[in-house]
Image (cartoon, rainbow, N blue to C red; front, side, top):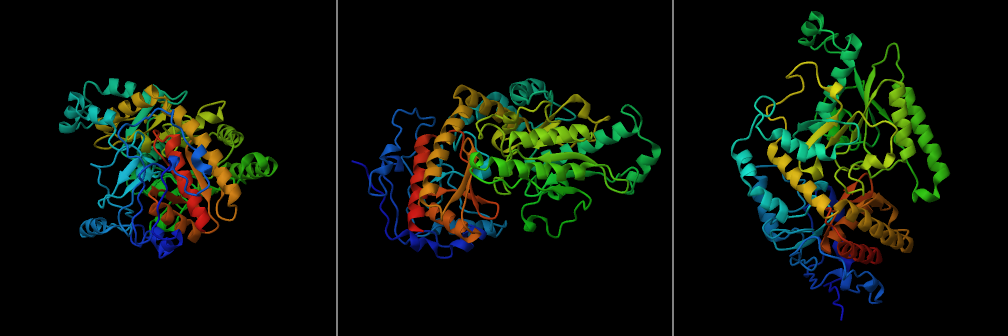
Length: 529
């Protein structure tokens, strides 16, 4: 007999202060003042009392993670609970915790489930801001951490740019270069997604200036002297073009190319001559709005080309950066045709194309690199990565190396520990076909979520995504915030993006049985609306 979800009071009791709870996460009442116990996963639970979701069972599916709990379990009457509140309060005396949604107990977290200090167990579809590929306490990564090679790098961290260790080339070959995007034979290792984009911009500027003065020509004394005064010609007026709704980081250059939330940018000096172009605002489902979407993409490409054109008094655009799916900006999609059109324009105008795969890379879309689905006639010039690789950097062709050492440089030049982690991640991804799992699970998730949306069109809409990299909309930002809070009260952790969307960023080990838990929670919240 299927076990039922027992709620102490109606879900509507959870909405108190829910809007503020999302805007200042982890600081307001979560769900009713009774515990929620899930003795078995929602996949075997009929929460509607109709048996409808008993069809959502996958008993023959082989577990990708052993030792996971049977489902979420909420023990405290409020979220965050008392121990989490105390832990955050202590931490807040040392660091700003206003963005914290919970304080985790990593010893008890496993696979797709994260546990907080109060023992509340959540199915995690946000995964440390989309950065966990194999789940919590992956056995493969724990085993890798015990190897002599990993220990050596932990106690002898090298400055890779000046004293690389003897196994570094082999590590690069076995990790990043084993999955290098087509046509890109070099990798620059960095520390995070923001600095990956930042150093990629530097490479683009240096490449442009080399071409301008003659690729193998010496830098002039005038350039060398004026750059020390932050003036031209040594400090040239050049631009990166990005897209409205794009997110590429919070450092200086990456922030100037970011156009999501004003709070990220306000008070920070910006490169005011950098260019932002409209990104297609498509209608969903895509297959039902082909004509309108084609027109929208053509409009955006026309504007993009106009912004790329050289102007006698303007700032030259040196590179264009674009996300395969605008993630932070609201999970905004565009077609392969649009991206091929963009690539054609960059080739036509002698501009580099940078694809930001920081969030979409390493498999969640059902392709290892999301841009593979575009089938471009010529590859991008640069592809940046981070997040699920547990490492960071960018791929490029040899000509994008600077003409002298130390020009694109820092002390660490990456981290061999993270590269060894990436090597292990790739081994697991390939051995367990985790990209295929994301594609298969994502197709199931999208189908079922779309079915729920058709039943509750006034609550959720615009279901979209590739693989498990998915999102859907709520009617208003406030409604989205309430929905996130209610899901968390049911033991399902998600995150917002854009003005009114919820994004799903599960691990690569997220399976249909986990999707069932999420889907049943979504339907329960929709019924309570």
